[in-house]
Amino acid sequence: MPVFSHRVLIDCAAAVFGAVGAPPAVAIRVAEALVDANLAGHDSHGVIRIPQYVDAIRDGEVVPGATPTISRDTAVSALVDGGWGFGQVTALRATDLAIEKAKRTGIAAVGAVRCNHIGRVGEYPERAARAGVIAFVVAGGFGGRGGRAAPFGGREGILGTNPMAFGIPSASEAPMLVDFATTAVAAGKIQVARAKGASLPPGSILDKDGNPSTNAEDFYQGGVMLPFGGHKGYALSMVVEMMGRVLTGADDYAEGGRGGAVYGRSGTLVVAIDPGLFRDRDTFATGVSETIGRVKAVPPAPGFTEVLVPGEPEERARAERTASGVYVEDATAAAIRATASALGLDPNATLPS
Image (tube, rainbow, N blue to C red; front, side):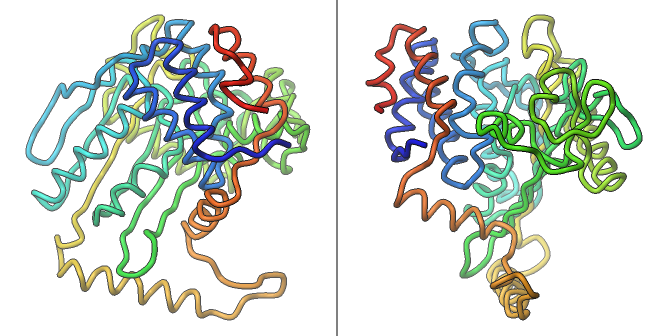
């Protein structure tokens, strides 16, 4: 399995997106977002997505040069129209707008529509938390017209992975970050398992006949994902669908031929809260740090070496992979090189062996 520095992967992704029509600033933004997902340990949302994004551009689902616009705006809210551009560009605009408004008014809600796949959802509340703002982000409607996730008790897909993420700033530690799909595994992790030839955890998917399976290939042959935690994950998925898609009005912006079957009804909601809304900001941050300290001081149970808090695994992975490099599966590296070659780029120069 080859190992690459994050800088090499960013340059590779930016070159590929530039070759398929993305302006330089957009190509770099999306490249950095994908590679940061790899650095954070979420390879499912990293460079494995490069061929998928290129295919989406070629199919007319993604408009690489689209610039997000604001279609509704108040002191405490806004609606960002991504124009079917890269989701990482649209979601970043929505997040920064929510941060700006929350710092000015105390609380803000910003929706984003026609946004396509936005990448690792945790990136956005983490960005807000590093700016001193609490944030909650949900992405709904990404199941598209068919859906690849079954409801609890069902055997056909109707929902997306419907992820949610929270970012909370602290005084001394990295932000506390909660980031998960409401399915037992994210779709990208099925893609990673397929590339590795690895089995999925039991309870992740059903095959096309509705039977439980651990074979990633069964998902791509008409299978469906299952919610995590049974009815509890399903309930959260429904909340995300209502807030991310229905509340933002994503359906009203759906267009035939754009966004494709998967992202044609995609909507994202960013809710940001200034910690100073109810108390002194520094006191809040100190309280977060003290709470984290008390939790981490709990003696580890058998089989564990320590108690971690949400976001800590990502911070450790980022430090380790920044220093030692990012592992990329052979199948993924080969797919990226094939994509580069099809665009007229030198595949071995784009992603050196």
